[in-house]
Amino acid sequence: MSKWIGSWHASQTKFDTRFFGLTFPQVSFENQTLRMVVHPHASGSKLRLKFSNRYGVKPVTVGKITVARHIQDGKIVTQTDVDVNFQGGPSVTIPVGEEVYSDPVSFKVDAKSDLAVSIYLPSYTKISTWHLTTAQSTYVADGNQTKVSDAIHFKKKIDSYYWLTSLDVMTEKKNSRVIVALGDSITEGFTSPLNANHRWTDFFWDRVHQEYPDLNLSILNAGISGNQILKDEADVKDEAGVGLANAGEKALTRLHWDVFSQTGVKDVIFLEGINDIFENADADQIIAGMKEVATKAHYRNLRIFIGTIVPFGNTDYYSEEKEHVRQDVNKWIRSNEIFDGVIDFDQALADPQIPNQILPEYDSGDHLHPNNEGYKALAYAVPLSFF
Image (cartoon, rainbow, N blue to C red; front, side, top):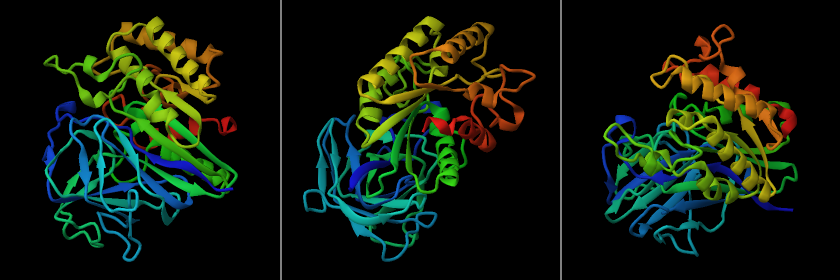
């Protein structure tokens, strides 16, 4: 029996150019094509795309959308591109605060074979809803280049997604499973190599596929850099005291958008809390937030597994007081009976000799985020018996 399941996801936030002090080449598009590359996990015979204007103050009109197999650097496989329609037409206007699904498209999606989604924005469109740090390049061209197979026109690269939030596939496989990884920058893969698909969620997919090649598993990445359990983006301040929109809505709020609304989701892996520690939340507050997340997931009949908070010794955020909070929260996580299981991400990354620090071989260099091998270690910390 055929059914829709989620195959890829990018959590959305309000547009803001001040995150981590980065600047971006433009704040709007006009008569331009964006070619966004997505990395599906589940295979299927059809696909549909979901676009979001959740944080927009004006409707967003897209004039043309195509999808094709992606080779590299914005190039697509000739003759694989197909049109994506909305209620039978090529264009769509996304209302303020809304999300829209495309019509189903006959297209053989192979897990791990990247797809290029090309969208043409004919009129002036201010960026409003996006995902900032994708570990994946988006390619920009002037004019309507949605059908162009080579990358000669796509000379500009921006490492973000715009309005595109989900890809679902139609599958006939009975043994399909959708997991949502709800987290912050460590789940998002902030320090993973650009365009390599080496987030821990990708490594976990690789591991499961090697062990169970017939399982049509999808792990949807719902990580947002700076995200917290307890505080919304407006409450997360930069050095000037201005709210950082790119930290996203707090996990307790975005459960609806990023977990419960995902097609076919059965399980959740939850890894958050470190940013709450940085913002001076105490252990009791963080634990209460974690309990609420678990309760809401169980109310939706989802299983939810929680990860221990990873080390952050030697970072600018570190203090003995904050380390005590981390230890107290992790002690509770390891002994709790509310979540359906515990994944010891802390133990996977920690230096056995200095357990408040990441093992040097796993350190990206900022003493907080893993490198390639560190992300792989996180993937191997997840017990396959859970799924």
